[in-house]
Image (cartoon, rainbow, N blue to C red; front, side):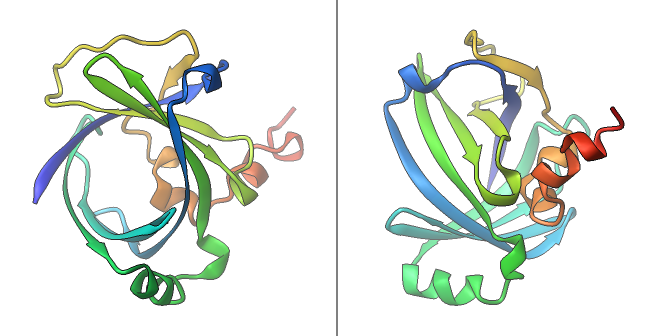
Length: 164
């Protein structure tokens, strides 16, 4: 088990010219309890089972255990998830010095949501913020994938539901 340290941001600009690779992801949750999430993910031709603890008070760090599993097993485990709650997204990888940004462009019920994450070696590590980076949402549970799996972003943020 190791500690995952990451910061999350909304994306407000054109990041695609900086993309060096991408992958299609489908993921579901066997447990979305905030104290411990259990995720099954298929990313292109690889699959993973991941368990994460609750985040620390700042929402930056949490324990993470991840194992690669056969794609056939992941497909079977995804069948245990509520199919309406499967998250589909395209992840774009953008190098940033010694780090990399992972920019997730959500599809389906979350269309229009784009979130950038950067994993860091410590909570105090500084990093360069590209122009296309928007508001920081680190620690905001409404941007955790486990929460999104139960709350369609497109429906919540539609003009009809925005109070305008």
